[in-house]
Image (cartoon, rainbow, N blue to C red):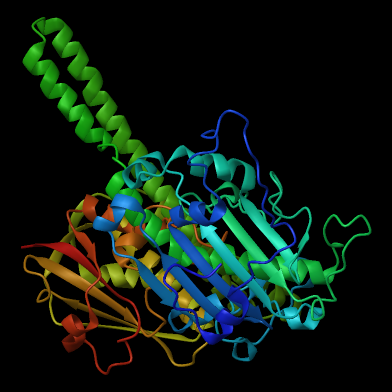
Length: 537
């Protein structure tokens, strides 16, 4: 099962030649009086040439010890897209470290400094060596089922027919098949139940193999009827490690390639407002009855207004959803402090101070609900407003934030929308700075009108791990590189839409283009975001 591009490392090469398996056999059939009946019938070695995405992984201990991902454009698509290979050296710490969600009932607060690099919050490390599993080799062939892409690649129906009967992930122990993993309808890793829109790997789209060594995998005990493993602690660790490797690490590399193909070959619908505007023009041009014309145009205008209202409400609601956890956390902390003061002290001054803080927090929350019009603002006021919401969280995570400016120029913005945008960016920075498990966490903001002509720009830089993918890909809806079920994939998309609504823009400059605004090079490896607000006199 060696890859088409051949570039295996020594570790993967040791496992990659696993072709002799117990369920592999050849049948010779002769059709009487019809020698052509089986003409053009493909076997798997031909079918796999239609797999756009291929991956080899070696899982050992608590790490992905070796890794190779290959994007293989098929057929005519080779003329439009280049193949690519990603090796272990490109993986981030979180992608290499095998982990799973912590059991909420067993959750205990841990010192961030004691956690391994790459471990996500509320996750725990999965070390398969502690469960007597040994090294695990994973081989994946993932196929494209999007009709427009299949058509462009000239992938025949024989591939679909094969996948209907043979898709899934099989398990082998010393070459012997462990049933019934990989049988039709047995989605034992829950691939199809991953409900993250736009980044699924459905069980029906993949042919995969998991290889184990019998001697070193004694923790996995087969049932007496030979139908799979007993679901003990070792089995849970085995499946959790595979889920992380496939549903998180592999998809982090497959999804951008899949998105680029979909963007090129799938015709996207025009914006609703644009379509309604076209309808108005058509009616005005072709409809002669003035009464009917006025009536239809009136309905279209109403539809446009209602659509804009719905979209605006959704943006604000989505922003509230992203921020609500921070607000609730602040309120809960204040209430706890108030209760402690009431119980432990007769001093009323401290209690009054805490109640005033609680009142301020609730007023902040009410500000986010109210819609604000686009007006002239000082960009520094947007920073100060956002800081009211997030300063306590940044302090709790020991993140140093500061702001500088070289301009007093005013901008055109909705204070509500602009605050939402900045909080989205800061929320992302906070998450990834914490996940990097590094000390000296910093966020720097610089406000200038010298970066982009006609705009006042807020440059935001952090010294975290940086973007995993092209930011232009990450601003699409439902795209997130946070582990499954943590990120909604809407934060940057909402920020981009809100900036556009205010006649501004969201951009991602290279550090070298903005280094003059920041001291030192510690932000070179991190994220740099530019919020460009329209400059006004």
